[in-house]
Amino acid sequence: MRKDSSDHAPLDEEYLRMHTLGELTPLSAPIRLVDYDPAWPHQFAEEAHRIRSVLGDRVIRIEHVGSTAVPGLSAKPILDIVLVVTDSAQEAKYAADLERISYRLRIREPGWYEHRMFQGPEESVNLHIFSAGCPEVDRMLAFRDWLRTSPDDCEWYARSKRDLAQQLWKYTQNYADAKTAVIAEILARAQRENFLQNKKARNLLA
Image 1 (cartoon, rainbow, N blue to C red):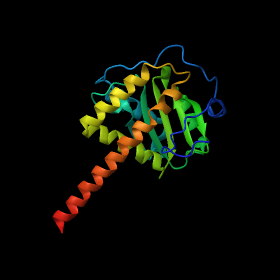
Image 2: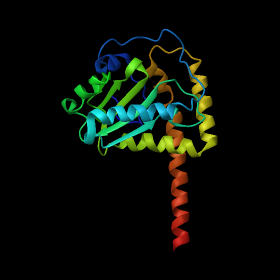
Image 3: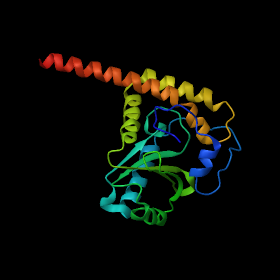
């Protein structure tokens, strides 16, 4: 079982099969990364509007995350969206409405923050659903925000992804798991920098 995002152990095939709804399909081609597309924020806004239109005030928060949310960063041409609801374990309160707008449940992970992942129309969106207060949401947003403001780490992450994309992977999740150590190092640096900046600000106010 996966513990949290600081656990760098890759997910094995048994875990993937246990938590994937429908067929677990191996990759038939290498991971494809494309240059940043300025249309991605607009696509996110459109999907966020569609999701809000069926869920209404059940949406506590909806955010564009992942590489497509970082201007200038190459990415797989699939949007990652994080949706925060009151309790992601209560699928009956949102799943049927998402299905009405062509989202289908693909991953259910009760042991990892009750994470649910729906694929959007034409598999162009991965919608990650978590409960309010989930620390994974904060981690995803912190990583996105840091890459948006740190050109050096953004470029290092891009190089790391390009290198990994050239390797052969059985499943997309294997590629994602291979990035976790780099992500953890970048987040640790972001936390140190933010701590130093906050300390400096407190000293100025003292």
